Length: 132
Image (cartoon, rainbow, N blue to C red; front, side, top):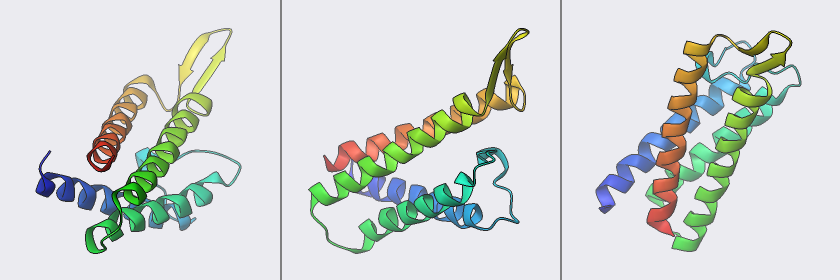
């Protein structure tokens, strides 16, 4: 990948995580399709983590850090994003019972948001590989 593509990807992902993090730490604002829908207060914790991830991703555009540092930061962002997917889609997003598997809020929305989250995870992985 060329450097401009990586910088555009970094900028887009950084802004996404920055906005998602800001929205996540404001309890009155709902994160819409990216909501964790938890009852444990993890929304704010993940909001802070997403905010930090956004700052780290954007800071990489303006600072000259070692490739290893950027790769480690990218790996941490990937880890938290995948953890978020597991919690929101498989821990809180499914109910398994006598009537089978129930998707929350419904299968079409569940699969669409999962697809979007996986695209973001793939973009994060591409960025990680660029600095590896």
